[in-house]
Length: 215
Image (cartoon, rainbow, N blue to C red):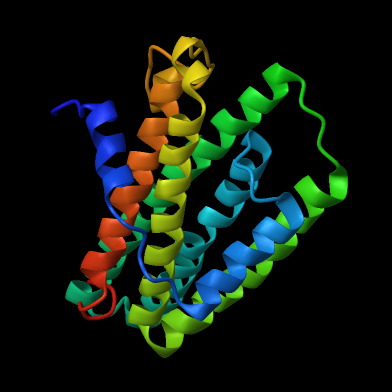
């Protein structure tokens, strides 16, 4: 597998304009700025990752319901199983992001209030889960499109965070999750890799927009 040039990938993101987000997406991002500020911080990124897992969980849930009713149709059931497998992989990837950020926050001894950083993210995630679920049931492309906007936003936020914090190049990356997520020379490369993951998730959702359900 070819190892990406993370600096090059970062520059590609910085050179690419953000998408024109939907009203719902803009409301979500605006709400996060209201509660967590416009500044990019580890704690704000952690909240972002709590929410980022949600669409994949919603799609997985819908798929399992469909499989319960369609297991007697082997070809369709197989497509659902493959869909669930991909959604699970994407969800797990977002989970590694969350765990790494939580570890960094702990290492730096950052203080976080219970309401803003524990309870409120769960409330937002609960709302976002049901929106993603409902949109998928009505029309999958609507749910995929919302996720495209979310992942595009996350991609740019991470890459801009590295640009605005050059000192990250000098901070070694040491983590108990290195064997699971990867070893990197410094924290700048970790955030570049996370930003690239978000771009890949965005492209995966884009590719599904015009496909039939569970394809």
